[in-house]
Image 1 (cartoon, rainbow, N blue to C red):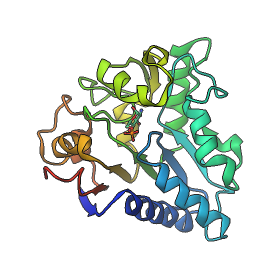
Image 2: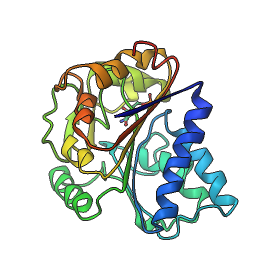
Image 3: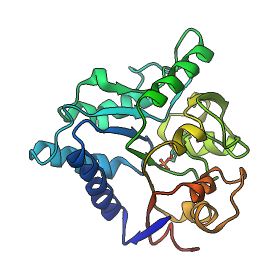
Length: 240
Ligand code: GLP
């Protein structure tokens, strides 16, 4: 794992975007694995700026997102499809038909999971961007999730519901279930870029980088991946 400690959130955004832009410049048909949450927003802002200046193009890029809440369709402002449109896709030259997010309102959620795993197996991520939950989750793979898991439906932990409730009017509106790429689908990416900022991520970052590799901290599995870049600010790195 290559760990880069930067001063602040702004620098995570700049450096993270440079790495992703490098992947696109190297391969204009790249498959980007993308993430939601507050952590990657700065990266998306920088990528939008680079695209608007003509430095990169998403015209032939394909994207696969990590996860989606069950019960929220893409028009719901808290859905991850809405988030991606709002923070990235609406502002760059991407063909939305080449952007994929699990469908949290599919009639048969089990079939949707199988479909999504086939999709990511056929479109292996050249780079997978990740955030980390304060309990060490990646995507919505909560502690205890087997490392060999593929796309599946999860019951969100109380901790995650509480963390994510800041984006909803009321905690009772946070969905209790989600569809998520599994840990095996994430580990299949050629390169992984994981970003974190703030003191409340320090323990999870420590467990990911220096802790034992086990399912108690799902992100610790990344120690087994051959090509991982971790970008953290000083606060998130404070226990390293
Ligand atoms: C959610 C997402 C994760 C994300 C995590 C942390 O649970 N499913 O992919 O990494 O939140 O979010 P934030 O970056 O807002 O702290």
